[in-house]
Structures are given as structure tokens and as C-alpha cells.
Length: 331
Image (tube, rainbow, N blue to C red; front, side):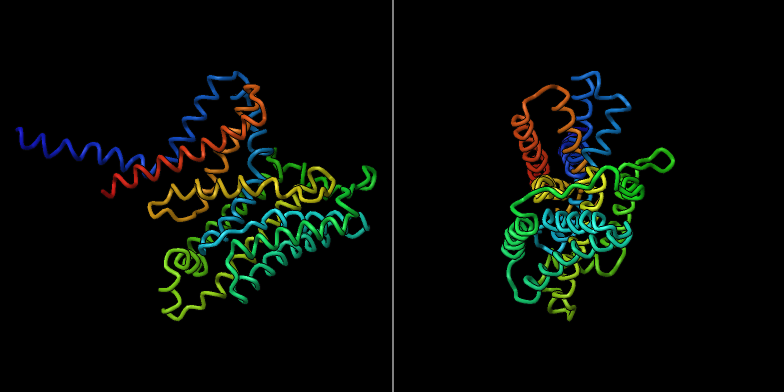
């Protein structure tokens, strides 16, 4: 009896560690949701939950999915905000010039993809590291925006001249579901399929894990890396279109506001993978976690700067919990 007990007991904490490793992000999400549910009576109202999904989730989720595409090949994209801004500028400018909304939207998507293509040339063509390449694109993009707007002046659309299809993209609803949320859901599903089912996604993740093995296997790794950054720019452009249609104005460098949280959500999402790899479900949960924290801290009346401190501490806590428990599980 004694021998059996001693054999079983060590397996119990190991099993618990395994549960924490696999579900650290989910546990953090449930915990903060429960805390804010008790901390403020308005948190669980339908209006507030809708606000979290529409205002705190949609745009950041799209930006974070774009970031996930770049991180999947072992890189990072600091110019995600630039792609958002260029798409927004092209979209608003063409609508202001009287072009059809569909044409303006295609131009906006093209502008975002162009940012990704520029990064692809720097990274896959010249061989510059993703960090330095996208950092350079970020600086160049900000300067171009300043030049195009005479020093950073917003480009407004006159209220009387805004097409209904333009408004619908940012503020419309289908069956009671906001259009931005529907678009975000479509991107989530499409990106999940691309990264998990398509050959490109499998190769991209393999490049992120063991790039030398991929190169020696005869796979064109550079092409896949280039495609990952072009895809990142294209996805980020969608956020630019929705942002413009929501606020009906282009504000230079406004896309940069999503950069740090997109990085945070992407790396928080890696805790959902046993290999610590970027994945769309984890990124989405990471965005939802950051959105709930931002909303909950706002409802509690905490100072904005303390909200940023709280978000940073949360990111540290989730990553630390996952890394420590994963290390114990492998010990």
C-alpha cells in the first residue's frame, strides 16, 4: 500500500502542472473575467460585453493576426501599424476624391500589401533581419505620412459626402451582428486554415522552428518568408479600412497604437502551444484577454497610465506562469 501511494503521489502534481501548461492562457482569461465581474456591476451588462468585442477586440485582433503571420516564420513586424495607416490613407483619400467605395477599398488593401512586399524585399531579397527591416519601414512610413498630409494633418470626410457603403463597413450590422465583428471572424477562420491546413502555413511554422532544416530540405524558405510578410501587410490593411470607416477620418500614424498590444497578444498566444509556437486561437484569446483587462480597468476608474502598468504586469504573469510550469513539466 505504501509503495503504491508513493508511486501515485508524484504523478498528481505533474498532472496538475500539465493542466496549467496547456491552459495557462485560458485560466488567466477566466480569472480576470471573474475578477471584473465582481469588481464592477456594469462589466457583465450586454452593452459592455458588446463594447469589448467591437471596440477592444476587432481591430486589435486583426492587427495581432497580421503580427502572427510574421512571427510564424521566426520574425516580427514592427510596421503593422504602417500598413494600417497606408491602407486608411488610400481608402479615405479615394473616397474623398469621389471614387467608388469598392475601388477605394481595393486600393487600401493594395497599399497594405505593398508595405508587406517592401518588407519582403528587405528581408528575403536583401537579407536584413525582420526586426531591423520592419523598424526601418516604420520610420519611413511615418515620414511619408507626414509628407502626404502637410505635417500630419488629418484627412476628414465631409458628413454629407460619406457613402452609405462606407458607413456600413464600419458601423453597419448584419442580423444584429456588427460588420467589423463579422469581418474579424472571417479573418480568424481564414488565417487559422492557412496556418494549420495549407502547405504554406505548415512550412512557415517549420521555418520558425528550424529554418536550417527547411533550407536543407530543398524548400524555398525565402519565398515563404516573403509571403508571410506580404500576408501580414494585407491583413493589417483590413484593420485600416475598418478603422477609417468607423471614425470617417484618416489620422496619420494612428495604426501605431495597435503595435505593442498586437505583439503582446501574439506572444501571450504562444502559451497555448506546447512548443511555444504562434497560433491563431492563442492570439485571439490573447487579444480577448487584453481587451477585457483594458475594459475592466477603465470601468473601475483606474488612471490610464496605471491601466498600462496593469496590462504589462498581466503579460508578464501569463508568460511567466506558462514558462515556469513548462520548465517544471520537462524537468
